[in-house]
Length: 177
Image (cartoon, rainbow, N blue to C red):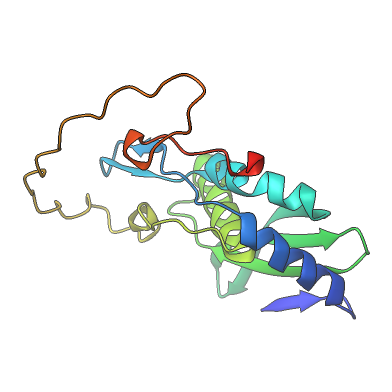
């Protein structure tokens, strides 16, 4: 559930502008247990930080521990998005740690921070590591092997100072256009 300041006109406008420029969180971290890449918390921050600053938005995340049902312990993360106008919105994400030790708590906090921040800011990422949160005790099922498609020959090298082509894999700098 999201809580907000009395007025949200300015923060909603700023969020809409920020989300128009937010990129994808790049899957650049390897999870050795599942042999898959995922977008970590740093990747989510890289995807949003310029858009936040440009639109006078800030994020504060605060971890905590909750026991909402019986003796089940949940790690919670409050995520608050603020705007220079003083308007804000906030939500809480709760995750049960896999076990009761500091490393599991820290992992759950990072997991909750990443997903809460992604949800608030509209960051697109695939859910590659959610399997670990399920505490199933076994490795994820093996992915079906597929043969990679044959790639066409690499394009000729780009000339210095030229615009990157879509085939080069380089991302053009959209700010200079």
